[in-house]
Image (cartoon, rainbow, N blue to C red; front, side, top):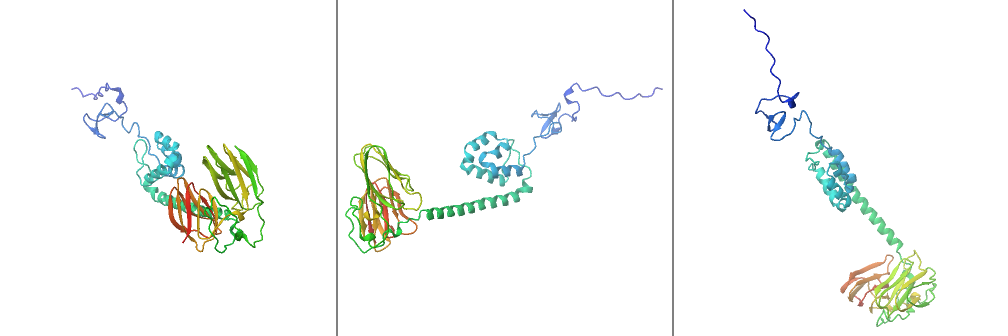
Length: 364
């Protein structure tokens, strides 16, 4: 009687693409699709055991890049988002707004890479990231505020005008009918005060020119006139004021120069297309107004009012600015455009008015 021989091996599979891959019965589900020939049927994707998915990007790295280099789009380059990374770089992080939004999204755990995979390590590092980010942001705001305050104090100190004591508050005198067009000297403003005076100097010319002056480091009154000018009319200095006049067409007005201790004026530069005159005088030439002053255009007065409140009006287009030098720190009670009506604090002392129309100052 014959003995059964060994069972022969099954015939090899005709599909050599599955060699070495796990075999699953037909119709078996694997990861949401039917397995057929070593692939997900209907998806065409290989087995994860054969080809692993791309590794997750690090939350810690993304957060640090967003916090430190977000304005350059480095965080988005790291996540594989090249297009938006370039846009973020070119806009400097959307002027900071985009960088802040991306940082918040990352800290909230909503950031992902270009394949929409979440970031690895979020739960382990989120508390540290939030605390450090808050400290840096708040600390930066505090440092910025302190730096701004220090800079403002430095500018105020540098702008302290030496003309405060140049003319003491005097008794009432009649206000000029037109302060900008009647620069009558006020002897009372400086009576009995022992101080050097600026020697009066006059210059004339036609067209562009540069004039050298010697103010001996003292403040002065400058009156510029070019009534026939039709183009761009400019009067500049190499002192702290830099630009006194910049207008189109004819001009007549007065300005103070060297109101601060730095950068004394030694030159005036004129740009004009017609004949002009430039007059430099001592502060004695500034008209005094006891309770009311009015003028047209740019002008300077010595405000000798009984109070530090003044009602101010302006009728005209362009910039309207009132700057007072009655305190150690210059006042700027009005800085606007066009027509103006209001009551402001204006300490008695020298006052510079910049206007393109008619203005009045009345003590309250």
